[in-house]
Image (cartoon, rainbow, N blue to C red):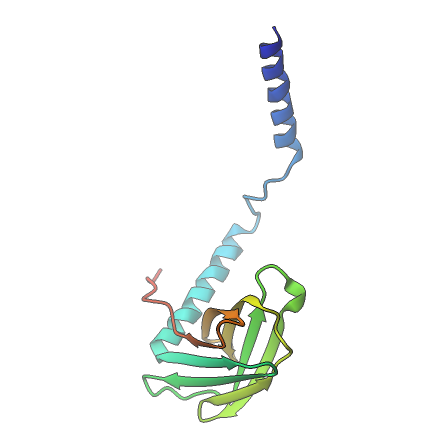
Length: 152
C-alpha cells in the first residue's frame, strides 16, 4: 500500500513543481530574437566578405591589435573590443581602440585569469569578429571569421 501512495505523492509533487516553476524555454518575442540572430550572422558574413582577421596581444595593462584584410578592404580608424567573462559580468570591459594602418592600442584594466570572450566590431557595427582567450596561459589570439555561414 505504501508504494502506490508514494507514487501518488511524487506525481502530485511533480505536477505542483511543473505548474509553479517557469522553465523559461519559450519566449514571447521569439521572432525578434530570431531577427537578432540573423543580424549577428550577417555581421559575421560581412567580416568574411571583407577578408578580415585580427591579431590581439594582451599584457598586464595594454591591448595591442593588428587588423588586416586579405581583400584589401579599407580599415577603420576606430574599433570597439568587448571582453566578457563567461560567469562574472562585473569584470567585463568595453574598449575603444584608435589606430592607423591596421595597428590599434588601448589601455586595459588587469584581467583575472580564466576564459574571456572577445568581440571586435567597427564603429558602425557592420561587421564583427569573435574569439576566446585563456589568461594567463595565452597572451595572443587570432580572430578570423567563422567558416562559411549558410545564407538564409
